[in-house]
Image 1 (spheres, rainbow, N blue to C red):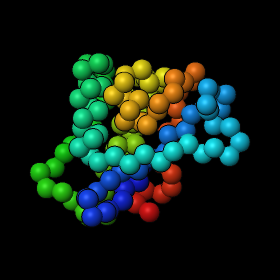
Image 2: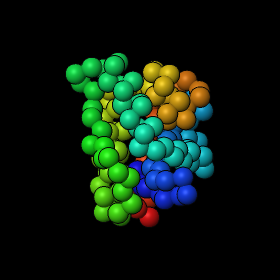
Image 3: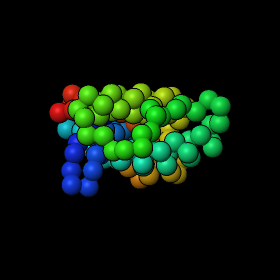
Image 4: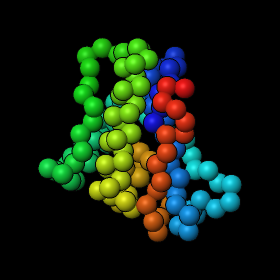
Length: 124
């Protein structure tokens, strides 16, 4: 997961790639897709995952009252969000929750779980 600053605020980008051999999976030069989400969108999906998986649901990095644009803070938050997504995909290697599928940009059923990648160095 890496962060990006735009006029609309801070976004966090990650690459979702279907695994090789899955229906519509990564074949040849199909690299997957870059998904951009705000921390608020991560909070929304965390609520859904928390309701579905209760006590075993992973936790997000803590929220802050103010929006931070400090590079170190954003890099640490991006690393925490990457760990969160990895933990979610351990719980749902084949995302079944409609909200999670939408969050990950998955529109087709998968035969195997998506592969999550950061798409580069955090903060670049």
